[in-house]
Length: 104
Image (cartoon, rainbow, N blue to C red; front, top):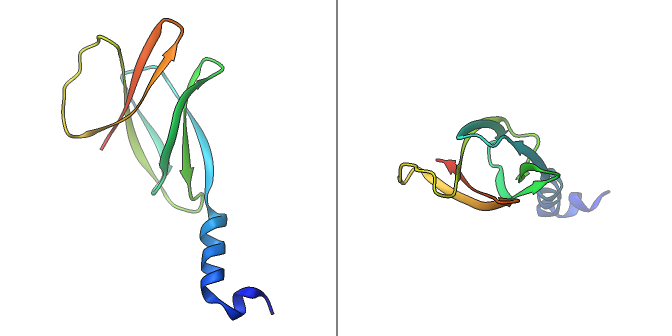
């Protein structure tokens, strides 16, 4: 018999712990875009990798995906202020500085 036969919580813990992965999603430098990400995906980081803007997301690959909406603004560019966006990070690429938001 395995350990999960004696302790049901061990089996549950093992499934939850093993189910998550970190996936990388490249983004375009554009005002708005949509990316399909598993339902409970948690954005961990946003950075440039080899001159490509990417986000790293903690996901459960077995979950359904849903569209997530992102906006990128350059420093000094106008945008509407609202409660419907979450700041992800500021990213520098040479002399360019971008600010990444998720529409919620």
